[in-house]
Image (cartoon, rainbow, N blue to C red; front, top):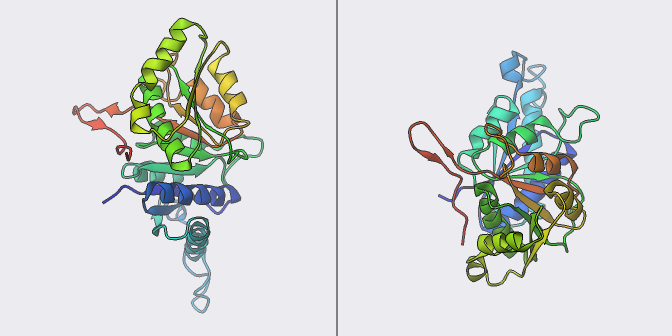
Length: 285
């Protein structure tokens, strides 16, 4: 069975924006959509049933079920024909969504939800999921530009090579130009690395128009600037400059906080002590 696109909701407007984006992603990938609401109240020992026996349509659980019905309706409007399932899962948002990511092709989240603290630019759930999920994570933020390109950050790291694969898939699905940007080296070495990383992808996705750019500015600066006119930014979770032990690099962190369009974060597979590889599902060709 195909791994679904999964989207987390919490009743916020940002979450409904994520549902719309997730529905489109599912339609483009010909995959089902699974809408998940993490229901934390039972673990806090709060009553979740109807407030009275003669008022069955009340209570926290009923409200949560209504949120899922609303989100399913939003998804159906955004991408008619996409199979939509819903799940109300007891637990806190972060562990629930990380568990769901184990069988997902993509996890989609809003940049902030109802739990967001006033003044924060992005919620902790989105940051934590981007760092630890078992599949790529798409954080829906900014206005986005439907006519703009997909922009991918390249640095030669394993994460950025996986990001290139994801970016080609996104560009092909959307019929968008792909701009591959290598920052910090606009000389011969930078151009050679770009050519090496992009080699072979043109044959796999001949319909994608690719523009490769090696620039001198820092990756954080140039990718944030490009996000102002891009439809999507794709980056690896960690680049070459990340310190050992970090699960999310400074560039991906900066984009999650400051990008002007949605950001897809792709992390390299994790080798578990057993020797098994924790790899997200293969990209569709």
